[in-house]
Amino acid sequence: MSSARVVLRDMGYLASVQAAVDNIGADATILWEYSPYLGRRHPMVISVMTGLGLSSDEIDTLFILAEDI
Image (cartoon, rainbow, N blue to C red):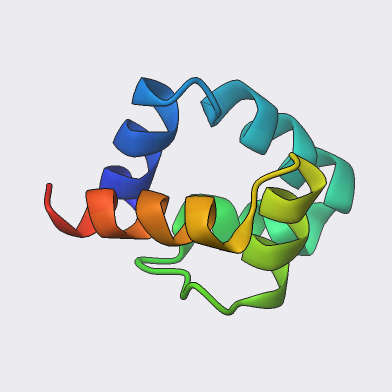
């Protein structure tokens, strides 16, 4: 998750993702803050990323970049 946050920050999405997670509710916030990993196909990931207008390919790229950190 730290790698994901670094990539999201570098790509300019971190604040928007944090706001989206906060808007989903307490369960999402707990997952975002304490899960060691959230998979590409996790419903929250899909919801937040598509809510930001990212395509499937763009989401894949974020995960690929995070894996390389």
